[in-house]
Image 1: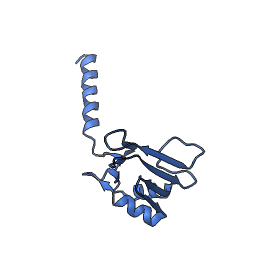
Image 2: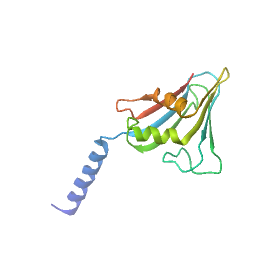
Image 3: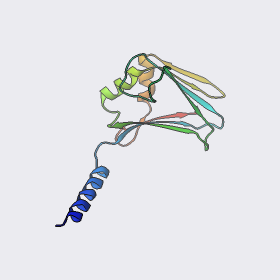
Image 4: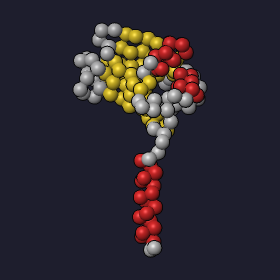
Length: 138
């Protein structure tokens, strides 16, 4: 075997390994299903947390403005490899969040405190391997 054959075979091996990986990416998808603008606000607890939605800043609040359905109506956050089935993953995500507020032209919903946030997130876990938290603003 010459060196180019070895390099080519190794590259094919790495590509195959990448696509055959058992663990999916942990993802949070927020989408606006309404015909008007919507806003999702997440207030984080103070301190260091495993899950980071954005680069560290002085603000403890993330505001996500979503345009009406069919336009720029989605925001995706990717957190690495794993599933949301793992209790420590859910616990770490919930520990980071103090408040979730969903505001549409017709209503405002607030989820605050560990019990409400846990129920809100667990109801929205989707995917064959429970890798997606899908928040649909209706």
